[in-house]
Image (cartoon, rainbow, N blue to C red; front, side, top):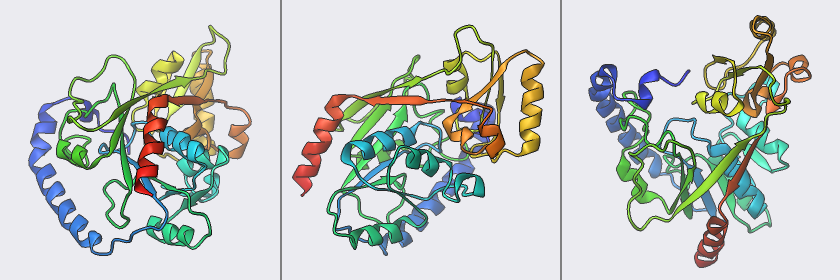
Length: 302
Protein backbone atom coordinates (compact mmCIF):
# COMPACT_ATOMS: atom_id res chain seq x y z
CA UNK A 1 0.00 0.00 0.00
CA UNK A 2 1.01 3.63 -0.46
CA UNK A 3 1.76 5.62 2.65
CA UNK A 4 -1.55 7.35 3.50
CA UNK A 5 -1.37 11.08 2.83
CA UNK A 6 -2.63 11.97 6.31
CA UNK A 7 0.28 10.22 8.10
CA UNK A 8 2.44 13.35 7.95
CA UNK A 9 -0.09 15.91 9.16
CA UNK A 10 -3.04 16.22 11.51
CA UNK A 11 -6.05 16.28 9.23
CA UNK A 12 -9.76 15.87 10.06
CA UNK A 13 -9.57 12.29 8.73
CA UNK A 14 -6.66 11.53 11.07
CA UNK A 15 -8.66 12.76 14.06
CA UNK A 16 -11.66 10.67 12.97
CA UNK A 17 -9.46 7.57 12.95
CA UNK A 18 -8.02 8.14 16.43
CA UNK A 19 -10.66 5.95 18.20
CA UNK A 20 -9.87 3.14 15.73
CA UNK A 21 -6.18 3.51 16.57
CA UNK A 22 -6.92 2.95 20.27
CA UNK A 23 -8.64 -0.35 19.45
CA UNK A 24 -5.78 -1.34 17.12
CA UNK A 25 -3.19 -0.58 19.78
CA UNK A 26 -5.11 -2.43 22.49
CA UNK A 27 -5.36 -5.57 20.38
CA UNK A 28 -1.67 -5.26 19.54
CA UNK A 29 -0.76 -5.22 23.23
CA UNK A 30 -2.76 -8.40 23.82
CA UNK A 31 -1.00 -10.16 20.95
CA UNK A 32 2.37 -8.89 22.22
CA UNK A 33 1.71 -10.43 25.63
CA UNK A 34 0.85 -13.84 24.19
CA UNK A 35 3.88 -13.86 21.89
CA UNK A 36 6.20 -12.93 24.75
CA UNK A 37 5.40 -16.20 26.51
CA UNK A 38 7.42 -18.06 23.86
CA UNK A 39 10.47 -15.79 24.07
CA UNK A 40 13.92 -17.32 23.54
CA UNK A 41 17.34 -16.09 24.68
CA UNK A 42 20.09 -16.27 22.08
CA UNK A 43 23.59 -17.49 22.86
CA UNK A 44 24.87 -14.90 20.42
CA UNK A 45 24.13 -11.21 21.10
CA UNK A 46 21.06 -9.88 19.27
CA UNK A 47 21.19 -6.33 17.93
CA UNK A 48 17.72 -5.23 16.87
CA UNK A 49 17.50 -2.31 14.44
CA UNK A 50 13.88 -1.25 14.32
CA UNK A 51 11.46 1.63 14.23
CA UNK A 52 8.15 2.69 15.69
CA UNK A 53 6.85 4.11 12.41
CA UNK A 54 5.23 1.99 9.72
CA UNK A 55 7.99 1.85 7.11
CA UNK A 56 9.85 4.37 5.04
CA UNK A 57 12.39 5.79 7.51
CA UNK A 58 15.50 4.33 5.82
CA UNK A 59 16.20 1.51 8.26
CA UNK A 60 17.62 -1.05 5.81
CA UNK A 61 20.74 1.02 4.87
CA UNK A 62 21.43 1.44 8.60
CA UNK A 63 21.14 -2.34 9.06
CA UNK A 64 23.57 -2.79 6.17
CA UNK A 65 26.20 -0.49 7.69
CA UNK A 66 25.97 -2.06 11.17
CA UNK A 67 26.15 -5.62 9.79
CA UNK A 68 29.13 -4.66 7.63
CA UNK A 69 30.93 -3.13 10.61
CA UNK A 70 30.35 -6.22 12.77
CA UNK A 71 30.65 -8.75 9.91
CA UNK A 72 27.40 -10.13 11.30
CA UNK A 73 24.58 -12.18 9.77
CA UNK A 74 21.20 -10.51 9.34
CA UNK A 75 17.85 -12.10 10.16
CA UNK A 76 14.71 -10.56 8.67
CA UNK A 77 11.23 -11.43 7.46
CA UNK A 78 12.00 -10.99 3.78
CA UNK A 79 8.81 -9.08 3.08
CA UNK A 80 7.05 -9.56 -0.30
CA UNK A 81 9.11 -12.50 -1.54
CA UNK A 82 8.86 -13.07 -5.29
CA UNK A 83 10.76 -14.83 -8.05
CA UNK A 84 12.08 -11.41 -9.12
CA UNK A 85 13.90 -11.04 -5.80
CA UNK A 86 15.05 -14.65 -5.55
CA UNK A 87 12.15 -15.33 -3.17
CA UNK A 88 13.84 -13.44 -0.35
CA UNK A 89 12.28 -9.95 -0.71
CA UNK A 90 13.62 -6.63 -1.99
CA UNK A 91 15.34 -5.49 1.21
CA UNK A 92 17.02 -8.87 1.68
CA UNK A 93 18.20 -8.75 -1.93
CA UNK A 94 19.79 -5.35 -1.29
CA UNK A 95 21.60 -6.65 1.79
CA UNK A 96 22.77 -9.76 -0.04
CA UNK A 97 24.18 -7.54 -2.81
CA UNK A 98 26.38 -5.97 -0.11
CA UNK A 99 27.88 -9.46 0.48
CA UNK A 100 26.12 -9.91 3.79
CA UNK A 101 24.83 -13.23 5.12
CA UNK A 102 21.05 -12.81 5.12
CA UNK A 103 18.48 -15.22 6.58
CA UNK A 104 14.85 -14.59 5.72
CA UNK A 105 11.65 -16.11 7.07
CA UNK A 106 10.80 -16.78 10.71
CA UNK A 107 13.37 -14.79 12.70
CA UNK A 108 13.09 -17.00 15.79
CA UNK A 109 13.86 -20.15 13.76
CA UNK A 110 16.81 -18.47 12.06
CA UNK A 111 18.26 -17.28 15.37
CA UNK A 112 18.04 -20.84 16.70
CA UNK A 113 19.82 -22.05 13.55
CA UNK A 114 22.59 -19.47 13.87
CA UNK A 115 23.06 -20.38 17.54
CA UNK A 116 23.89 -23.94 16.47
CA UNK A 117 26.88 -22.70 14.50
CA UNK A 118 30.32 -22.35 16.04
CA UNK A 119 30.40 -18.60 15.52
CA UNK A 120 29.84 -16.46 18.61
CA UNK A 121 29.60 -12.99 17.09
CA UNK A 122 26.45 -10.85 17.19
CA UNK A 123 23.38 -11.26 15.01
CA UNK A 124 21.68 -8.20 13.52
CA UNK A 125 17.89 -8.32 13.45
CA UNK A 126 16.27 -6.13 10.79
CA UNK A 127 13.06 -4.86 12.37
CA UNK A 128 11.45 -6.79 15.23
CA UNK A 129 11.35 -4.03 17.86
CA UNK A 130 7.69 -4.99 18.37
CA UNK A 131 8.46 -8.72 18.24
CA UNK A 132 8.95 -10.20 21.75
CA UNK A 133 9.78 -13.74 20.58
CA UNK A 134 13.53 -13.06 20.77
CA UNK A 135 15.25 -11.32 23.67
CA UNK A 136 17.37 -8.43 22.43
CA UNK A 137 20.72 -7.46 23.88
CA UNK A 138 20.71 -4.08 22.14
CA UNK A 139 17.72 -2.28 20.61
CA UNK A 140 18.31 0.61 18.23
CA UNK A 141 15.52 2.77 16.84
CA UNK A 142 15.91 4.60 13.52
CA UNK A 143 14.17 7.86 12.65
CA UNK A 144 14.20 10.19 9.67
CA UNK A 145 14.68 13.76 10.88
CA UNK A 146 12.34 15.16 8.19
CA UNK A 147 9.55 12.70 9.00
CA UNK A 148 9.97 12.71 12.78
CA UNK A 149 6.92 11.04 14.34
CA UNK A 150 4.70 11.97 11.40
CA UNK A 151 1.44 13.40 12.71
CA UNK A 152 2.10 11.76 16.09
CA UNK A 153 -0.92 9.43 15.95
CA UNK A 154 -1.05 5.63 16.16
CA UNK A 155 -2.03 3.42 13.22
CA UNK A 156 -4.30 3.89 11.29
CA UNK A 157 -4.74 7.55 12.28
CA UNK A 158 -0.99 8.04 11.88
CA UNK A 159 2.23 6.14 11.18
CA UNK A 160 3.10 5.09 14.75
CA UNK A 161 3.14 1.39 15.58
CA UNK A 162 3.57 2.36 19.24
CA UNK A 163 3.33 5.54 21.25
CA UNK A 164 6.25 7.76 22.23
CA UNK A 165 6.68 5.79 25.48
CA UNK A 166 8.16 2.95 23.39
CA UNK A 167 11.33 5.03 23.10
CA UNK A 168 12.12 4.08 26.69
CA UNK A 169 12.82 0.49 25.53
CA UNK A 170 15.53 1.65 23.14
CA UNK A 171 19.22 1.49 24.04
CA UNK A 172 20.04 4.10 21.40
CA UNK A 173 18.51 6.14 18.59
CA UNK A 174 19.94 6.85 15.14
CA UNK A 175 18.49 9.88 13.37
CA UNK A 176 18.98 10.25 9.63
CA UNK A 177 19.65 13.91 9.01
CA UNK A 178 17.33 15.93 6.82
CA UNK A 179 16.09 19.50 6.61
CA UNK A 180 13.70 20.84 7.63
CA UNK A 181 13.65 18.72 10.78
CA UNK A 182 10.30 17.71 12.24
CA UNK A 183 9.98 19.36 15.63
CA UNK A 184 8.02 16.53 17.28
CA UNK A 185 11.02 14.18 17.35
CA UNK A 186 12.03 14.58 20.99
CA UNK A 187 14.20 11.80 22.45
CA UNK A 188 13.93 11.19 26.22
CA UNK A 189 16.93 12.11 28.36
CA UNK A 190 19.38 9.29 28.98
CA UNK A 191 19.01 7.61 25.58
CA UNK A 192 22.12 8.06 23.39
CA UNK A 193 21.37 9.77 20.09
CA UNK A 194 23.57 9.35 17.01
CA UNK A 195 23.25 10.74 13.52
CA UNK A 196 23.56 9.34 10.02
CA UNK A 197 23.62 11.00 6.62
CA UNK A 198 22.34 9.70 3.29
CA UNK A 199 23.72 10.66 -0.10
CA UNK A 200 21.74 9.67 -3.18
CA UNK A 201 24.14 9.19 -6.10
CA UNK A 202 22.56 10.25 -9.39
CA UNK A 203 24.01 8.10 -12.22
CA UNK A 204 23.05 10.63 -14.90
CA UNK A 205 25.05 13.67 -15.98
CA UNK A 206 24.11 17.04 -14.53
CA UNK A 207 21.23 18.66 -16.38
CA UNK A 208 19.60 15.39 -17.45
CA UNK A 209 15.81 15.48 -17.17
CA UNK A 210 14.80 12.67 -14.84
CA UNK A 211 11.49 10.84 -14.57
CA UNK A 212 11.73 9.14 -11.19
CA UNK A 213 9.46 6.37 -9.94
CA UNK A 214 9.43 4.56 -6.63
CA UNK A 215 7.41 2.16 -4.51
CA UNK A 216 8.74 3.03 -1.06
CA UNK A 217 7.25 4.40 2.14
CA UNK A 218 8.03 8.09 1.59
CA UNK A 219 9.04 8.51 -2.09
CA UNK A 220 9.24 12.32 -1.98
CA UNK A 221 12.64 12.06 -0.27
CA UNK A 222 13.99 10.20 -3.29
CA UNK A 223 12.31 12.45 -5.84
CA UNK A 224 13.75 15.58 -4.21
CA UNK A 225 17.22 14.04 -3.93
CA UNK A 226 17.50 13.36 -7.68
CA UNK A 227 15.75 16.56 -8.80
CA UNK A 228 13.13 14.72 -10.83
CA UNK A 229 11.03 16.69 -13.35
CA UNK A 230 8.38 13.94 -13.36
CA UNK A 231 7.50 11.60 -10.52
CA UNK A 232 5.32 8.53 -10.10
CA UNK A 233 4.61 6.71 -6.84
CA UNK A 234 3.68 3.05 -6.45
CA UNK A 235 2.63 1.10 -3.34
CA UNK A 236 5.47 0.06 -1.03
CA UNK A 237 7.15 -3.20 -2.20
CA UNK A 238 5.26 -3.02 -5.51
CA UNK A 239 6.14 -5.82 -7.95
CA UNK A 240 6.64 -4.28 -11.40
CA UNK A 241 5.40 -6.07 -14.53
CA UNK A 242 6.48 -5.78 -18.16
CA UNK A 243 3.30 -3.80 -18.80
CA UNK A 244 4.23 -1.35 -16.02
CA UNK A 245 7.65 -0.84 -17.55
CA UNK A 246 6.19 -0.11 -21.00
CA UNK A 247 3.91 2.52 -19.48
CA UNK A 248 6.84 4.05 -17.58
CA UNK A 249 8.89 4.38 -20.78
CA UNK A 250 5.99 6.11 -22.54
CA UNK A 251 5.38 8.34 -19.52
CA UNK A 252 9.05 9.46 -19.41
CA UNK A 253 9.25 9.93 -23.19
CA UNK A 254 6.39 12.44 -23.14
CA UNK A 255 8.68 14.75 -21.14
CA UNK A 256 11.90 13.76 -22.88
CA UNK A 257 13.21 12.41 -19.56
CA UNK A 258 15.30 9.43 -18.47
CA UNK A 259 13.86 6.83 -16.10
CA UNK A 260 15.46 6.44 -12.67
CA UNK A 261 14.45 4.53 -9.56
CA UNK A 262 15.73 3.40 -6.15
CA UNK A 263 17.81 0.28 -5.58
CA UNK A 264 14.92 -1.20 -3.59
CA UNK A 265 12.63 -0.72 -6.60
CA UNK A 266 15.25 -1.83 -9.13
CA UNK A 267 15.47 -5.32 -7.64
CA UNK A 268 11.71 -5.66 -8.22
CA UNK A 269 11.90 -4.82 -11.93
CA UNK A 270 11.74 -7.54 -14.60
CA UNK A 271 15.24 -8.70 -15.62
CA UNK A 272 15.07 -7.05 -19.04
CA UNK A 273 14.15 -3.70 -17.46
CA UNK A 274 17.03 -3.96 -14.99
CA UNK A 275 19.43 -3.89 -17.95
CA UNK A 276 17.90 -0.65 -19.22
CA UNK A 277 16.81 1.35 -16.16
CA UNK A 278 19.47 2.44 -13.65
CA UNK A 279 19.02 3.05 -9.95
CA UNK A 280 20.42 5.77 -7.74
CA UNK A 281 22.60 4.16 -5.04
CA UNK A 282 22.14 5.39 -1.50
CA UNK A 283 25.36 5.93 0.45
CA UNK A 284 24.78 5.93 4.21
CA UNK A 285 27.30 7.14 6.76
CA UNK A 286 26.78 6.75 10.51
CA UNK A 287 28.77 8.96 12.86
CA UNK A 288 31.91 7.31 14.27
CA UNK A 289 30.67 7.93 17.82
CA UNK A 290 27.97 5.32 17.23
CA UNK A 291 30.45 2.56 16.44
CA UNK A 292 32.49 3.42 19.53
CA UNK A 293 29.33 3.19 21.64
CA UNK A 294 28.28 -0.07 19.97
CA UNK A 295 31.62 -1.79 20.65
CA UNK A 296 31.56 -0.67 24.27
CA UNK A 297 27.98 -1.84 24.68
CA UNK A 298 28.74 -5.25 23.18
CA UNK A 299 31.81 -5.70 25.35
CA UNK A 300 29.80 -4.78 28.45
CA UNK A 301 27.15 -7.39 27.61
CA UNK A 302 29.59 -10.26 26.98
